[in-house]
Length: 116
Image 1: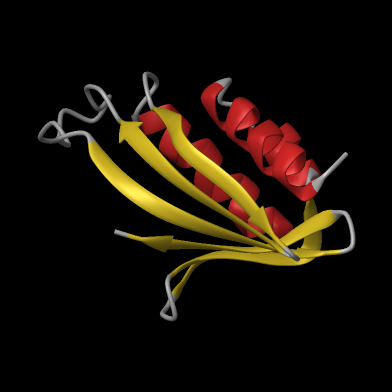
Image 2: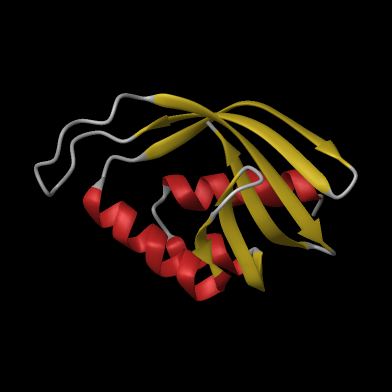
């Protein structure tokens, strides 16, 4: 499986709200972060639990891949994210676009950075 295929599989797992499958594509010490900034979810378990909480809060959450390309050990994807109503009654989050940079070590994703 190419890195691009892996990143697309991660989005499919994200859209199925399957946090366990999503993190199965990641290294043990992988993380999600803002681009060149703070880590949002640290390690495979931190990513899994963070996503599980987000999926519980936004059960209609999904990401549509707008563009995707593989460049060496990186995959760049422009994604359109829709949250839908939150279960906690908080204000609706307007749909938004992000550029996600997926970094790979071998066949596993080691880091996802979001530019928003």
